[in-house]
Image (tube, rainbow, N blue to C red; front, side, top):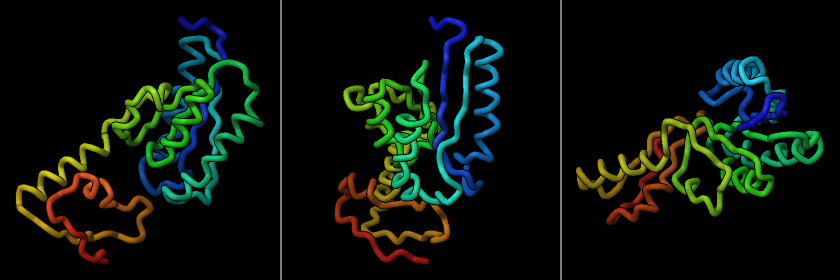
Length: 185
């Protein structure tokens, strides 16, 4: 059991703009209340640091800027106590999962989760708390496509969104004769 006075640094690498759920405006208050609870109830010396940039507006941006977490860990964290990361749970969790394993730190994706993260050899310190696993969506779409015997699909997508639905998971399921039609806009 941890003793009172334990130093915990929680780094939240997330989106700053309120474009979708795992963002600072939506998650920040809960994170701040959680850190306050760690202080008040458990007596931990807990701090919360946001790492990121308001210019990060998409999943590719958040993946491309993962180096910001490593920079914080290597240059700004004092190395005293427990280092934990809370992140949205998009594609950034794969490189951050590898970093957290090397650092022996905790990684908690809050928005989404992938089954591969259960591989404790690759991601021993990643813990999923998300209600949704993306692999479940692949199963649902696969079942619908198979049920109706659909051989091709057209993706209707709002191109202004920062988290577009991709077909990569469905292709991985190797549906018989599945071909992708044009992206309908």
